[in-house]
Image (cartoon, one colour):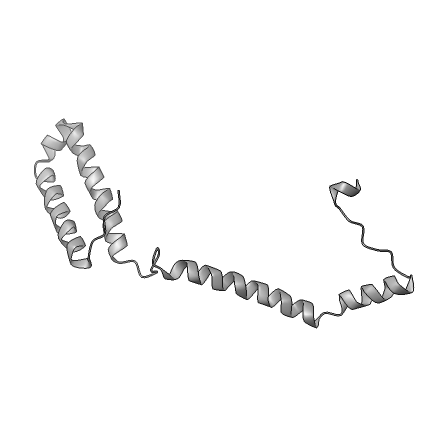
Length: 114
């Protein structure tokens, strides 16, 4: 299930969780005698931590900028490789040696040739 909350709504939920945890923890003997109450307190505290973290996260994880940033990153890598290839004379030298007969062609690792 996915629920979207505004910042103020999330703060209200966190306050309600605080109150529920406090009310369950008021009588420590009750929580110690009933393991279900102790489990509920632990679950509520874990939920509270998760919500608090999502409220104060600054990385914009999951926003619409994510896929565009990933595509830009990949495209930057492709562009950098193409730029290096363009400035490299290794392929030209290899072709010149092959045409002159001083180098053997690159052996293909294609299964068809096996």
